Image 1 (cartoon, rainbow, N blue to C red):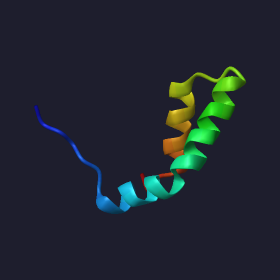
Image 2 (cartoon, rainbow, N blue to C red):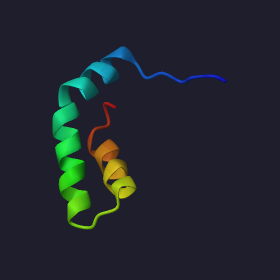
Image 3 (cartoon, rainbow, N blue to C red):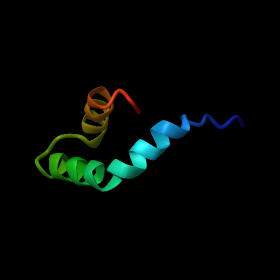
Length: 49
């Protein structure tokens, strides 16, 4: 099984924003937004990922 990894710079940026990302997703999901939609939008907003 091949494992795809992300660039180190993207991993560092995600780690820096981890708490904020989780908070954003939880807030949206609690208002009824499907988690997969919010994650899609998150990755659109953060092209560096």
